[in-house]
Image (cartoon, rainbow, N blue to C red; front, top):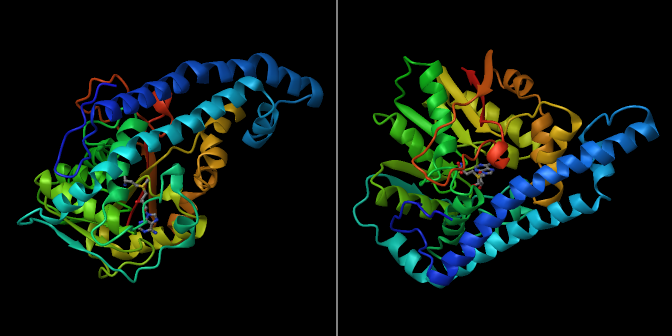
Length: 381
Ligand SMILES: C[S@@+](CC[C@H](N)C(=O)[O-])C[C@H]1O[C@@H](n2cnc3c(N)ncnc32)[C@H](O)[C@@H]1O
């Protein structure tokens, strides 16, 4: 692994052995996502689809039929097991390293000195069931677990884990998803001079900082459900010299006044929430935008193509604790946006932001090297 992740006050620094393990996992992931994945398609095209066509006198009609036909195949089972194992190994390699350094990281988060931005936590906030019920993408404790007073574990494992998961392809600050959204807005709304921007589901503020970079005159806010993620986000932003205001809030209903923001954004939030929650988040986005303000939720693309193309990204739904991934790809966001009171819905591929990274991997749309660009689901208020 070419480790070019930018160091800051709360990033867990792996020792020699931890770095070797993390590098192994990242390279194994590249191998599984490229060479082994190619074999899965070949098995489908050369064996599974012809057999299906012979038996049914038609091609598989959707991704579910492809999945049922592929599941008995040894190559698919091998690919699937390798991918799941890689995911577990990744969290093992990061979790042990963070645990070793946790007291130190918590102390560094506490003593960040004079602050530019702010942190507002709400210990009474109820984590909705769609988040509390699973360790999302097998991340131990998911985003919201708060182990103790001053905990930053969730943030620390997400920051390092995301860098390894994306094989460095989200750039040295894991900022490319937010950066893609900001670039989309700059291209399509060139006269936009936002005074206030909200990033929903900000976790560690990696995408939030990209918005702050793109619009340096704006007051930037980030909200999330998880206290440990937000403590980390605050310390990280301060250490990197940014002024961001973080608060612990549910994006379905926040305490900001009506029309408070010029841009309401998110990065990969929607596919980790339930269908009713997506509808509520769009309604809240509408409430929070001033007239003419812009919603910009960046997420995985709604895949087009044959049933096989739809089947591969659905792997996470069944095998990687991403229970809402498949359903989000089927959701009619335009209809939900209309129901939320937006009249001008738009969507499109976000420009691929190429960060200063030499890993050679651009991590797009959640499907590795060959994936599509991140997709913007947006509307004008
Ligand atoms: C995949 S992470 C997003 C990471 C980050 N935005 C990025 O660009 O990498 C999804 C985040 O959304 C948060 N989340 C999920 N549902 C939420 C809700 N209803 N309100 C606020 N945050 C939520 C989770 O706690 C988690 O931190």
